[in-house]
Image 1 (cartoon, rainbow over the protein chains, first blue to last red):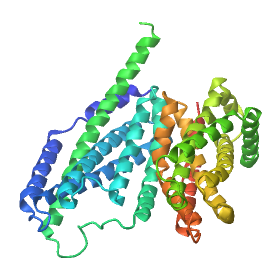
Image 2 (cartoon, chains in turn blue, purple):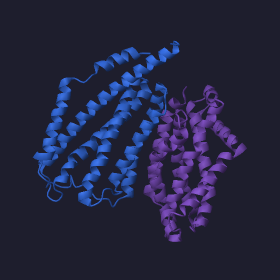
Image 3 (cartoon, chains in turn purple, blue):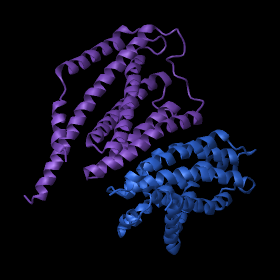
Image 4 (cartoon, rainbow over the protein chains, first blue to last red):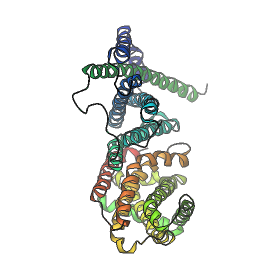
Length: 237
Length: 224
């Protein structure tokens, strides 16, 4: 097995100082843009500012789930465990981002809509998406042998990702009476709001990349420890 | 041996195994019956209410039944390690999955067809005038259920806590099927009955997507 070679690449992929500094800079700029620079929304007031992080977390969460799909397909084709590490890292980060979405959403909804939660299409599908990938992570905890775990979770990961558009379309048609999003419905939006959102997305993408790389490295090290343990058990200690 | 021939051999084997004991079908039918009775406590089962809530509860009961019934599809092979023997056969590995899929589809459809009149009588819903359309909805929904369920049965069979795991994997993925088939059934049972092409097309799309996915990953899933 090529565990040695793989772990060598893993330890070389430690985060570099400039990249982490860049992400921190982006986060600071995004916070400034979203909390101070962008004008306060007329009807919703200050609470609307949470929206910049809410939406950008959702977008970055989607990107993470696309990475799960890529990792799963690539694992089935190549059988290189590194693709499985990418899948698990991306799934965990995606679930974390969607947790942010599901927590910030109600915080915004309570003062604006007067309720914490409503079974609107967007909310329901985000919740279902979150459940789908939590199931993926649960499945991973229940299979011990690394290759087997990588295989079955790649299969489930592909099925879960294929399910995303179907979930969205079905819930969309099911709840056609849902309120349309406020953003993007006309030109009267202050351009600074759009820029703040893009800046936030860049920052969350940066955080996503850092987290996935760290988690990937952790998984690589874990796999190496497992291999050593198995070796020790085989040689009878 | 061609794929179709091998699939039919596996299908015949599955049907023979089940109809020798019929324990899986019998247990599942009783389970769905219990769910249908228990659901009557959650709303007032008058005729108009039943038309609105009945289809949803019926499909939910079918999904639960599927997530319990399909466990044994691959678990049964583990007891005597018969899956290894099947793998040794000089056939396309996908035919093992396909045979099981068709068998599970037939089992589930049989359960549904047996319980449909019971549901109709208990909840006072007239199904006879729209039987053809209803069967079409049942078939399309059940193909999706059987396709994903059989694949996930193979996935869950390799994990710990598999009895708990299969519903956990299957039910969220099947949410679109639940929505589409419930809406289509509500339309068919409505007054006047209306066959919703949008939802039928959606169900067909779901079936095609996951049958294709199963076909593409099937051989990986069965390897040792």
